[in-house]
Length: 289
Length: 282
Image 1 (tube, chains in turn orange, brown):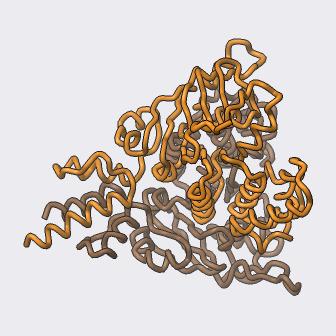
Image 2 (image 1 turned 60 degrees about the vertical axis):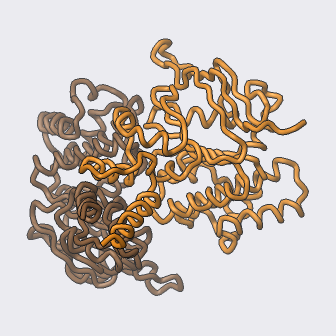
């Protein structure tokens, strides 16, 4: 069977938490439809309570739709028969690495996933070494995870996900608890895996991280309020502000520059693009003099 | 005023894994100051904070809060903690009481204040962190949102009416809106209480916008001590330590390095944009 070009597909997906107070719960995800292209880097943004983490848990079949449908690698996530196929395809990395490291030794922790897939010990060894090298933590393989920094622990968690050899890694705010150094290390690894062909779904509220994605989905109040390329989404800065999201620094600078009457294309949303624009403008200017 | 003179702290002294966490650190923080402390993970800044409210004692050196030497043997720890309130990272994990009001009242109660005074302080602290005492006092902390929980945890420290309020990464893990709200709240408390506020943060924009004084810790040493303009003006040195100036300033530095004739390097977005406009509008 040929692989579908959309690794994740949601059709009017709805999720409602069951609470004691019948009416108060409400829908955490309310009838959302979208696709994630195989091999893409997709960022999902929204403030706390927007439904983005609930969506991530649905993609990993930790939660099941209460309405609509969600397919991961063609498998219907509401069918429990496919649970392990779904998790093998889409691995998950959570916000707090302390909540997902289970072993007292780094390499045992990374081996935990493949062991559960029933892979032979020799192959597990290869996968663990490869994954730890990929995240730059091989030299720490015999260490205890609790002695590592937050960023290092998060890299171990990513190695654990990679050792499952998934097609897709879903990262739920993996950098929220990290310092700037840890944050850029994790983001660089995400991009490295993406360049290698892996699908990355990055849930974040750091706009600078989202500006480097192929596709951006913005959630608010359980709905998708915008989706598109970073250029399409971040050029609608006023709407982002209206739902209390931050604006990437390049977009904020561009707004000021435009307000001063300088013609700056709306498509500029990253610092690289803005720097290129300014450099070109000043170079031609110099030549003209 | 806080006066730290020549403090040194060594972990595991005399053992093979001995490490110098603080190395001859001295600085002064004036009354009413809003001071930022920056340094990357492992720089020694957490060790420093723990000295400021007496959780750790230095191997040598002294710390004065007002006229009191808090490093002196037999110093009254309760008195130190009343003067210096420390809000840890993710303080909401420390909420433990049945109701918000009981949690906030825990500190003042331990000071031996009358019930009436404890009640008054609880209401005052909740109002200071922007929570209506009537509405939230009776709620369980676990019914609250992440941002509200954090406010309650900060209220618990504010209720002690500390002369010095130290906040270690108070906005870590918050979304942009809550981040802004919590910083606004900290500013309000500072203005109303006229206390010394010490903010530890990785967010250089916040430090530049809020602080009048910045300390930089690297490898256990105090390496910079000045105004935000002075400290972030030494961005090359900060970069070498794995730190940076605020993003807007870093962007201007990058343009300048590629040959764009940038003059001043302001620390905020509007100021940075003005510099770019000058260059483009020539």
